[in-house]
Image (tube, rainbow, N blue to C red; front, side, top):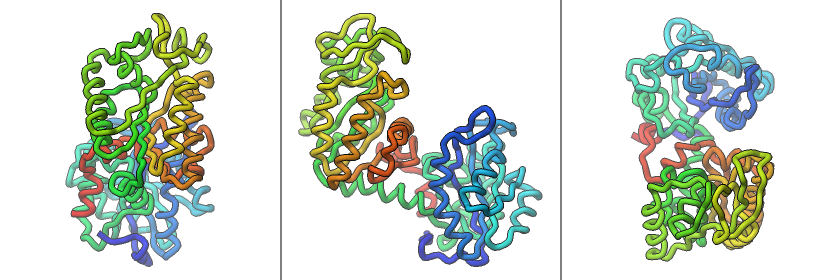
Length: 398
Protein backbone atom coordinates (compact mmCIF):
# COMPACT_ATOMS: atom_id res chain seq x y z
CA UNK A 1 0.00 0.00 0.00
CA UNK A 2 1.32 3.44 -0.95
CA UNK A 3 1.48 6.42 1.40
CA UNK A 4 -0.54 9.47 0.37
CA UNK A 5 1.95 11.95 1.82
CA UNK A 6 4.79 10.55 -0.30
CA UNK A 7 2.73 9.99 -3.45
CA UNK A 8 2.78 12.61 -6.22
CA UNK A 9 -0.45 12.93 -8.18
CA UNK A 10 0.63 14.93 -11.26
CA UNK A 11 -1.37 13.71 -14.30
CA UNK A 12 -3.04 10.99 -12.21
CA UNK A 13 -6.78 10.41 -12.00
CA UNK A 14 -7.43 9.63 -8.33
CA UNK A 15 -10.57 7.60 -7.64
CA UNK A 16 -11.46 8.47 -4.05
CA UNK A 17 -14.04 6.62 -1.94
CA UNK A 18 -15.38 9.25 0.43
CA UNK A 19 -18.16 9.11 3.00
CA UNK A 20 -20.54 11.87 1.96
CA UNK A 21 -23.48 10.24 3.72
CA UNK A 22 -24.59 13.56 5.20
CA UNK A 23 -27.98 14.61 6.59
CA UNK A 24 -30.22 16.70 4.30
CA UNK A 25 -33.34 18.65 5.19
CA UNK A 26 -36.57 18.49 3.17
CA UNK A 27 -35.19 21.11 0.77
CA UNK A 28 -32.00 19.09 0.23
CA UNK A 29 -29.81 21.47 2.23
CA UNK A 30 -26.95 19.84 4.11
CA UNK A 31 -27.52 20.17 7.86
CA UNK A 32 -24.12 18.81 8.97
CA UNK A 33 -21.15 18.87 6.59
CA UNK A 34 -18.60 17.36 9.00
CA UNK A 35 -17.96 14.33 6.80
CA UNK A 36 -17.43 16.40 3.66
CA UNK A 37 -15.00 18.72 5.43
CA UNK A 38 -13.10 15.70 6.74
CA UNK A 39 -12.33 14.60 3.16
CA UNK A 40 -11.06 17.99 1.96
CA UNK A 41 -7.34 17.54 2.80
CA UNK A 42 -7.16 14.41 0.64
CA UNK A 43 -9.01 16.03 -2.29
CA UNK A 44 -6.90 19.19 -2.07
CA UNK A 45 -3.63 17.22 -2.00
CA UNK A 46 -4.50 15.60 -5.35
CA UNK A 47 -5.67 18.71 -7.19
CA UNK A 48 -2.87 20.91 -5.82
CA UNK A 49 -0.30 18.53 -7.33
CA UNK A 50 -1.86 18.52 -10.79
CA UNK A 51 -4.00 15.43 -10.49
CA UNK A 52 -7.74 15.12 -11.04
CA UNK A 53 -10.28 13.73 -8.60
CA UNK A 54 -13.18 11.30 -9.09
CA UNK A 55 -15.32 11.08 -5.96
CA UNK A 56 -17.63 8.19 -5.18
CA UNK A 57 -19.90 7.80 -2.18
CA UNK A 58 -23.23 6.51 -0.96
CA UNK A 59 -26.02 8.59 0.54
CA UNK A 60 -28.77 7.08 2.66
CA UNK A 61 -30.34 3.71 1.93
CA UNK A 62 -31.92 3.81 -1.52
CA UNK A 63 -31.90 -0.01 -1.67
CA UNK A 64 -30.59 -0.41 -5.18
CA UNK A 65 -32.81 2.02 -7.06
CA UNK A 66 -32.37 5.65 -8.09
CA UNK A 67 -34.29 8.38 -6.28
CA UNK A 68 -34.20 12.17 -6.14
CA UNK A 69 -34.09 12.04 -2.35
CA UNK A 70 -30.73 10.29 -2.29
CA UNK A 71 -29.02 11.91 -5.28
CA UNK A 72 -25.53 13.19 -4.64
CA UNK A 73 -26.19 16.10 -7.02
CA UNK A 74 -27.58 17.94 -3.97
CA UNK A 75 -24.02 18.16 -2.61
CA UNK A 76 -22.38 19.77 -5.65
CA UNK A 77 -22.80 23.46 -4.79
CA UNK A 78 -21.67 23.11 -1.17
CA UNK A 79 -18.70 20.92 -2.10
CA UNK A 80 -17.60 23.50 -4.65
CA UNK A 81 -17.80 26.23 -1.99
CA UNK A 82 -15.73 24.15 0.44
CA UNK A 83 -13.15 23.64 -2.32
CA UNK A 84 -12.79 27.42 -2.67
CA UNK A 85 -14.75 27.65 -5.87
CA UNK A 86 -13.36 24.66 -7.75
CA UNK A 87 -16.12 23.60 -10.16
CA UNK A 88 -17.46 20.15 -9.32
CA UNK A 89 -18.60 18.16 -12.34
CA UNK A 90 -21.29 15.54 -11.92
CA UNK A 91 -21.96 12.21 -13.55
CA UNK A 92 -25.56 11.01 -13.27
CA UNK A 93 -24.21 7.45 -13.37
CA UNK A 94 -21.33 5.91 -11.44
CA UNK A 95 -20.54 3.23 -14.05
CA UNK A 96 -21.11 2.85 -17.79
CA UNK A 97 -20.36 5.01 -20.82
CA UNK A 98 -21.40 8.34 -19.28
CA UNK A 99 -19.18 7.86 -16.23
CA UNK A 100 -16.29 6.63 -18.39
CA UNK A 101 -16.55 9.64 -20.71
CA UNK A 102 -16.79 12.08 -17.80
CA UNK A 103 -13.67 10.53 -16.29
CA UNK A 104 -11.73 10.63 -19.56
CA UNK A 105 -12.62 14.29 -20.08
CA UNK A 106 -11.28 15.34 -16.67
CA UNK A 107 -8.34 17.72 -16.74
CA UNK A 108 -5.70 18.35 -14.10
CA UNK A 109 -7.12 20.12 -11.05
CA UNK A 110 -10.73 19.16 -11.82
CA UNK A 111 -13.20 17.26 -9.63
CA UNK A 112 -15.90 14.83 -10.73
CA UNK A 113 -18.61 13.53 -8.38
CA UNK A 114 -20.28 10.24 -9.34
CA UNK A 115 -23.92 9.49 -8.57
CA UNK A 116 -24.87 7.46 -5.48
CA UNK A 117 -23.18 4.06 -5.50
CA UNK A 118 -26.12 2.47 -3.71
CA UNK A 119 -28.44 3.16 -6.64
CA UNK A 120 -26.91 -0.17 -7.72
CA UNK A 121 -27.58 -3.30 -5.65
CA UNK A 122 -24.16 -4.56 -6.71
CA UNK A 123 -22.46 -2.03 -4.41
CA UNK A 124 -23.71 -3.53 -1.15
CA UNK A 125 -23.43 -7.07 -2.52
CA UNK A 126 -19.71 -6.54 -3.12
CA UNK A 127 -20.10 -7.44 -6.79
CA UNK A 128 -16.73 -7.90 -8.48
CA UNK A 129 -17.82 -6.78 -11.97
CA UNK A 130 -19.29 -3.59 -10.51
CA UNK A 131 -16.06 -2.94 -8.58
CA UNK A 132 -14.03 -3.50 -11.75
CA UNK A 133 -16.17 -0.95 -13.65
CA UNK A 134 -15.57 1.61 -10.92
CA UNK A 135 -11.86 0.84 -10.85
CA UNK A 136 -11.55 1.49 -14.59
CA UNK A 137 -12.31 5.18 -13.99
CA UNK A 138 -9.08 5.97 -12.11
CA UNK A 139 -5.32 5.46 -12.19
CA UNK A 140 -5.02 5.26 -8.40
CA UNK A 141 -7.49 4.36 -5.65
CA UNK A 142 -7.75 6.20 -2.35
CA UNK A 143 -9.98 4.90 0.44
CA UNK A 144 -10.88 7.83 2.68
CA UNK A 145 -14.20 6.46 3.97
CA UNK A 146 -13.60 5.09 7.44
CA UNK A 147 -17.34 5.23 8.14
CA UNK A 148 -17.87 2.37 5.66
CA UNK A 149 -14.69 0.40 6.39
CA UNK A 150 -16.68 -2.28 8.23
CA UNK A 151 -18.65 -3.11 5.07
CA UNK A 152 -17.33 -5.51 2.40
CA UNK A 153 -18.88 -3.39 -0.35
CA UNK A 154 -17.68 -3.11 -3.93
CA UNK A 155 -16.28 0.41 -3.55
CA UNK A 156 -14.60 -0.12 -0.18
CA UNK A 157 -13.13 -3.62 -0.18
CA UNK A 158 -13.53 -5.43 -3.51
CA UNK A 159 -12.20 -2.56 -5.64
CA UNK A 160 -8.76 -2.65 -4.00
CA UNK A 161 -7.78 -5.83 -5.86
CA UNK A 162 -7.90 -3.94 -9.19
CA UNK A 163 -5.07 -1.62 -8.15
CA UNK A 164 -1.54 -2.82 -7.41
CA UNK A 165 -0.06 -2.07 -4.01
CA UNK A 166 1.70 1.06 -5.29
CA UNK A 167 -1.55 2.49 -6.69
CA UNK A 168 -3.81 2.19 -3.67
CA UNK A 169 -3.64 4.07 -0.40
CA UNK A 170 -5.54 5.47 2.55
CA UNK A 171 -6.54 9.13 2.44
CA UNK A 172 -5.63 11.50 5.26
CA UNK A 173 -8.91 10.93 7.08
CA UNK A 174 -8.63 7.14 6.98
CA UNK A 175 -5.01 7.35 8.14
CA UNK A 176 -5.99 9.58 11.06
CA UNK A 177 -8.92 7.35 12.05
CA UNK A 178 -6.81 4.20 12.07
CA UNK A 179 -3.87 5.85 13.86
CA UNK A 180 -6.03 7.36 16.60
CA UNK A 181 -7.97 4.14 17.15
CA UNK A 182 -4.67 2.24 17.34
CA UNK A 183 -3.35 4.75 19.86
CA UNK A 184 -6.29 4.11 22.20
CA UNK A 185 -6.37 0.33 21.77
CA UNK A 186 -2.69 -0.51 21.70
CA UNK A 187 -0.72 2.46 23.02
CA UNK A 188 -2.88 3.80 25.84
CA UNK A 189 -1.41 5.79 28.67
CA UNK A 190 -2.92 4.81 32.00
CA UNK A 191 -5.28 5.42 33.71
CA UNK A 192 -7.44 4.62 30.66
CA UNK A 193 -11.12 5.51 31.10
CA UNK A 194 -13.85 4.33 28.73
CA UNK A 195 -17.19 6.15 28.93
CA UNK A 196 -19.93 3.98 27.45
CA UNK A 197 -23.48 5.24 27.05
CA UNK A 198 -26.45 4.65 24.83
CA UNK A 199 -29.73 2.82 25.05
CA UNK A 200 -28.96 -0.89 25.28
CA UNK A 201 -26.43 -3.15 26.95
CA UNK A 202 -26.94 -5.59 24.06
CA UNK A 203 -25.52 -3.01 21.61
CA UNK A 204 -22.36 -2.59 23.67
CA UNK A 205 -21.63 -6.11 25.01
CA UNK A 206 -18.65 -6.74 22.73
CA UNK A 207 -16.99 -3.37 23.31
CA UNK A 208 -17.42 -3.69 27.09
CA UNK A 209 -15.98 -7.24 27.01
CA UNK A 210 -12.97 -5.97 25.08
CA UNK A 211 -12.51 -2.94 27.34
CA UNK A 212 -12.43 -5.17 30.41
CA UNK A 213 -9.03 -6.29 29.12
CA UNK A 214 -7.79 -2.77 28.39
CA UNK A 215 -9.35 -0.08 30.55
CA UNK A 216 -8.65 1.06 34.10
CA UNK A 217 -12.14 2.51 34.46
CA UNK A 218 -15.44 1.91 32.68
CA UNK A 219 -18.14 4.54 33.17
CA UNK A 220 -21.73 3.65 32.26
CA UNK A 221 -24.46 6.14 31.34
CA UNK A 222 -27.56 6.43 29.20
CA UNK A 223 -30.50 4.03 29.11
CA UNK A 224 -28.23 1.00 29.41
CA UNK A 225 -27.33 2.02 32.97
CA UNK A 226 -30.79 0.97 34.20
CA UNK A 227 -30.29 -2.64 33.11
CA UNK A 228 -27.16 -2.71 35.28
CA UNK A 229 -28.94 -0.99 38.17
CA UNK A 230 -31.91 -3.37 38.03
CA UNK A 231 -29.48 -6.30 38.03
CA UNK A 232 -28.25 -4.90 41.38
CA UNK A 233 -31.76 -4.97 42.83
CA UNK A 234 -32.88 -1.39 42.28
CA UNK A 235 -36.40 -0.50 41.17
CA UNK A 236 -35.81 1.44 37.94
CA UNK A 237 -39.47 2.37 37.39
CA UNK A 238 -40.31 2.92 33.71
CA UNK A 239 -36.67 3.43 32.72
CA UNK A 240 -35.37 1.71 29.62
CA UNK A 241 -34.33 -1.76 30.75
CA UNK A 242 -33.48 -5.03 29.03
CA UNK A 243 -34.93 -7.56 31.44
CA UNK A 244 -33.47 -10.44 29.44
CA UNK A 245 -29.95 -9.01 29.94
CA UNK A 246 -29.91 -8.76 33.75
CA UNK A 247 -27.76 -11.88 34.15
CA UNK A 248 -25.38 -10.59 31.50
CA UNK A 249 -25.10 -7.24 33.29
CA UNK A 250 -24.22 -9.07 36.52
CA UNK A 251 -21.69 -11.18 34.67
CA UNK A 252 -19.96 -8.07 33.27
CA UNK A 253 -19.83 -6.48 36.72
CA UNK A 254 -18.30 -9.64 38.18
CA UNK A 255 -15.72 -9.85 35.38
CA UNK A 256 -14.73 -6.25 36.06
CA UNK A 257 -14.23 -7.07 39.73
CA UNK A 258 -12.09 -10.11 38.92
CA UNK A 259 -9.95 -8.10 36.49
CA UNK A 260 -9.54 -5.14 38.83
CA UNK A 261 -11.37 -2.74 36.51
CA UNK A 262 -13.33 0.04 38.22
CA UNK A 263 -16.89 -0.20 36.85
CA UNK A 264 -18.92 2.91 37.60
CA UNK A 265 -22.73 3.06 37.56
CA UNK A 266 -24.89 6.13 38.27
CA UNK A 267 -25.53 7.01 41.93
CA UNK A 268 -28.55 9.16 41.07
CA UNK A 269 -30.71 10.12 38.11
CA UNK A 270 -32.89 12.83 36.69
CA UNK A 271 -36.23 11.04 36.44
CA UNK A 272 -39.12 12.10 34.19
CA UNK A 273 -42.82 11.26 34.26
CA UNK A 274 -42.84 10.82 30.47
CA UNK A 275 -40.45 10.75 27.52
CA UNK A 276 -40.87 14.36 26.48
CA UNK A 277 -38.88 17.62 26.51
CA UNK A 278 -41.68 19.10 28.66
CA UNK A 279 -41.78 16.22 31.16
CA UNK A 280 -41.98 16.80 34.91
CA UNK A 281 -38.60 15.87 36.38
CA UNK A 282 -36.93 15.21 39.71
CA UNK A 283 -33.48 14.15 40.89
CA UNK A 284 -33.42 10.97 42.96
CA UNK A 285 -30.83 8.55 44.28
CA UNK A 286 -30.92 4.94 43.13
CA UNK A 287 -32.79 3.72 46.20
CA UNK A 288 -35.59 6.25 45.61
CA UNK A 289 -36.44 5.48 41.98
CA UNK A 290 -40.16 4.76 41.76
CA UNK A 291 -42.82 3.29 39.50
CA UNK A 292 -44.12 5.46 36.69
CA UNK A 293 -40.90 7.49 36.37
CA UNK A 294 -38.03 6.96 33.93
CA UNK A 295 -34.36 7.96 34.10
CA UNK A 296 -33.42 10.34 31.29
CA UNK A 297 -30.11 11.71 32.62
CA UNK A 298 -27.51 11.15 35.31
CA UNK A 299 -27.83 13.17 38.52
CA UNK A 300 -25.49 15.64 40.22
CA UNK A 301 -23.72 13.09 42.50
CA UNK A 302 -23.01 10.90 39.48
CA UNK A 303 -21.70 13.87 37.51
CA UNK A 304 -19.28 14.70 40.34
CA UNK A 305 -18.06 11.09 40.58
CA UNK A 306 -17.63 10.71 36.82
CA UNK A 307 -15.89 14.08 36.43
CA UNK A 308 -13.35 13.10 39.08
CA UNK A 309 -12.54 9.84 37.28
CA UNK A 310 -12.23 11.60 33.90
CA UNK A 311 -9.99 14.36 35.24
CA UNK A 312 -7.59 11.77 36.64
CA UNK A 313 -7.31 9.88 33.33
CA UNK A 314 -4.54 9.89 30.72
CA UNK A 315 -6.52 8.18 27.93
CA UNK A 316 -10.28 8.66 27.40
CA UNK A 317 -12.62 6.90 24.99
CA UNK A 318 -16.18 8.25 24.82
CA UNK A 319 -18.87 6.25 23.06
CA UNK A 320 -22.47 7.16 23.87
CA UNK A 321 -24.22 9.97 25.77
CA UNK A 322 -25.18 10.03 29.46
CA UNK A 323 -28.83 10.79 28.81
CA UNK A 324 -31.37 12.20 26.39
CA UNK A 325 -29.20 15.21 25.57
CA UNK A 326 -31.47 16.12 22.64
CA UNK A 327 -33.93 17.42 25.26
CA UNK A 328 -32.52 20.53 26.97
CA UNK A 329 -33.93 19.46 30.32
CA UNK A 330 -31.93 16.23 30.19
CA UNK A 331 -28.68 17.35 28.56
CA UNK A 332 -26.74 18.39 31.65
CA UNK A 333 -25.08 15.04 32.37
CA UNK A 334 -23.79 14.65 28.84
CA UNK A 335 -22.68 18.28 28.71
CA UNK A 336 -20.79 18.13 32.03
CA UNK A 337 -18.99 14.93 31.05
CA UNK A 338 -18.07 16.50 27.69
CA UNK A 339 -16.67 19.53 29.53
CA UNK A 340 -14.69 17.25 31.86
CA UNK A 341 -13.20 15.41 28.86
CA UNK A 342 -12.21 18.77 27.34
CA UNK A 343 -10.58 19.82 30.63
CA UNK A 344 -8.71 16.51 30.96
CA UNK A 345 -7.47 16.97 27.39
CA UNK A 346 -6.19 20.43 28.26
CA UNK A 347 -4.31 18.82 31.14
CA UNK A 348 -2.57 16.39 28.77
CA UNK A 349 -4.92 13.42 28.39
CA UNK A 350 -5.59 11.88 24.96
CA UNK A 351 -9.33 11.81 24.19
CA UNK A 352 -11.08 10.00 21.36
CA UNK A 353 -14.78 10.67 20.73
CA UNK A 354 -16.51 8.05 18.61
CA UNK A 355 -20.02 6.91 17.86
CA UNK A 356 -22.74 9.02 16.26
CA UNK A 357 -24.43 10.34 19.39
CA UNK A 358 -21.19 11.22 21.17
CA UNK A 359 -20.02 13.11 18.10
CA UNK A 360 -23.38 14.90 17.88
CA UNK A 361 -23.06 15.85 21.55
CA UNK A 362 -19.49 17.12 21.32
CA UNK A 363 -20.53 19.23 18.31
CA UNK A 364 -23.70 20.49 20.02
CA UNK A 365 -21.65 21.79 22.94
CA UNK A 366 -18.98 23.28 20.59
CA UNK A 367 -16.17 21.20 22.10
CA UNK A 368 -14.87 19.37 19.02
CA UNK A 369 -11.72 21.51 19.01
CA UNK A 370 -11.13 20.85 22.72
CA UNK A 371 -10.66 17.07 22.48
CA UNK A 372 -7.87 15.11 20.81
CA UNK A 373 -9.84 13.43 18.02
CA UNK A 374 -13.45 13.17 16.89
CA UNK A 375 -14.05 10.06 14.80
CA UNK A 376 -16.32 10.04 11.75
CA UNK A 377 -16.60 6.26 12.06
CA UNK A 378 -19.66 5.35 14.09
CA UNK A 379 -20.30 1.66 13.43
CA UNK A 380 -16.85 1.16 11.92
CA UNK A 381 -15.12 2.48 15.04
CA UNK A 382 -17.32 0.35 17.28
CA UNK A 383 -16.48 -2.80 15.32
CA UNK A 384 -12.79 -1.89 15.37
CA UNK A 385 -12.88 -1.65 19.16
CA UNK A 386 -14.81 -4.90 19.35
CA UNK A 387 -11.79 -6.53 17.73
CA UNK A 388 -13.46 -7.27 14.41
CA UNK A 389 -11.63 -7.16 11.10
CA UNK A 390 -12.69 -4.23 8.92
CA UNK A 391 -12.86 -5.32 5.25
CA UNK A 392 -12.12 -1.82 3.92
CA UNK A 393 -8.83 -1.78 5.82
CA UNK A 394 -7.83 -5.42 5.33
CA UNK A 395 -8.31 -5.22 1.54
CA UNK A 396 -5.98 -2.25 1.27
CA UNK A 397 -3.20 -4.03 3.13
CA UNK A 398 -3.51 -7.33 1.24
